[in-house]
Length: 263
Ligand code: ARG
Image (cartoon, rainbow, N blue to C red; front, side, top):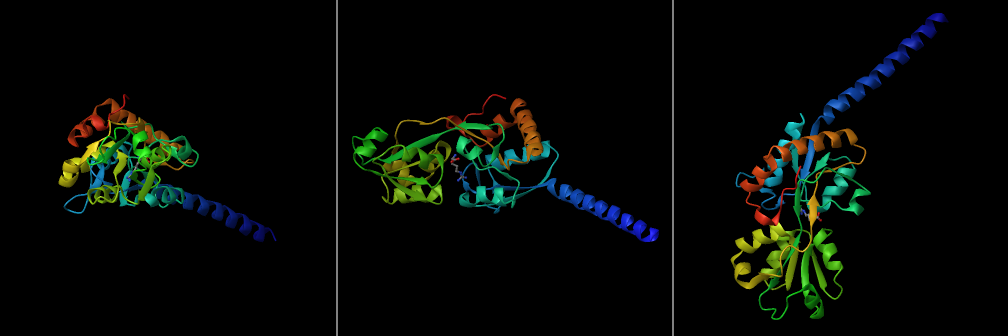
């Protein structure tokens, strides 16, 4: 009888011990962070000629995680899959020019901001006498934006404009070059990039004003990952203070389209 009791105790201690082991290995696994990034946002993140992820945000996130002592793995995920994949724990961090928004904060956590940017509007040159969004609305223009982005939300505020949505921002600009829409709204860095790169656009499009909103980009995490958030914030703060973020901003020629916030 006593023996049996003893056996039970030993067994239960062993089980608790096992649970502990399990948790331990989970923690070690967690110190290798899986980071998702959408590689369709040149020069912030894209696939280079070698087929590797490259760009301002790729450089930045590598510095951030190294600086906080993590091992990491980068995965290329489309814009539409970023938030869902984070919440369902397919990855631990997301960096993809994601604007810190109150509505998004209900579901996810954000790091301190690493860049200030905003949306810019490009319209076709043959739209004469159109110099504002109000006028675009008056002529019931068709304007393109990437779905579920701040550009899309921005357009929704301008009743009368016919919004055409795209899965990728690049598709909106190509469509514009082919006269499939009258203009596009996007994050100013990308709008400027495509404007300069695509000859048809450079010749046939013009900016409507300058940057129209002020937005801050943050790294996105799961809400419950408080410890990770603290580490990422501390690391980012360091890199903002010691000029690393500004150096990367210069390296990728972000110019006035995005500004490094003070630490
Ligand atoms: N800054 C905008 C937003 O957060 C657009 C981000 C789109 N990013 C991307 N990688 N496609 O809504």
